[in-house]
Image (cartoon, rainbow, N blue to C red; front, side):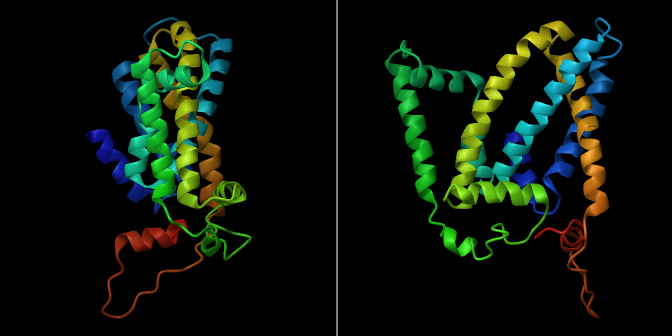
Length: 249
């Protein structure tokens, strides 16, 4: 329940804050809490240089998956994100096993895979967005040009010839498959580091350090295109002010 509420709140916050800045705050806050409770530096073996390199690679891939997931959230909304992105690894592994292996896994897994595919198709057909309306500005299909990253992701989706919500569904499905593969590949590193809890704490810390230069550049280059105008007798809502500061719609 708390995770679902967090996703709904994240959707509202991402209307005001840039995705990279939001992920940085999330990773940094999680790292501070986990460093206090888990104490990854004082517990366990000393981390070698090669393990730190693996941790940096792990953090980079973790940031990429988080970026794709939250961008899919901004495109599809919180409900479809919960339905697509928040499946457990066991469900996705069973689905991929039915689709790409000869064993199949029995009739129950086959039925589950069939229902999952039907559900994704229903979510794709649920939207009736007219892509040509959103493509009125051929240089910036997202409408307002928030950043180079946002423009690149929107341009990639529009290049596929689908509306943004449909592209978001495809992006979330691809992201959840990448997340499962990432978790599977991280098991060996968690054994080397000293457990998944220690790995998770260090991953959040390194991810925040990886994102810090990007956040600094974004903060330095963000322009306020629409300054907030105060009219006598009118009080500007706080979110409107933040929207002008972060240059978002």
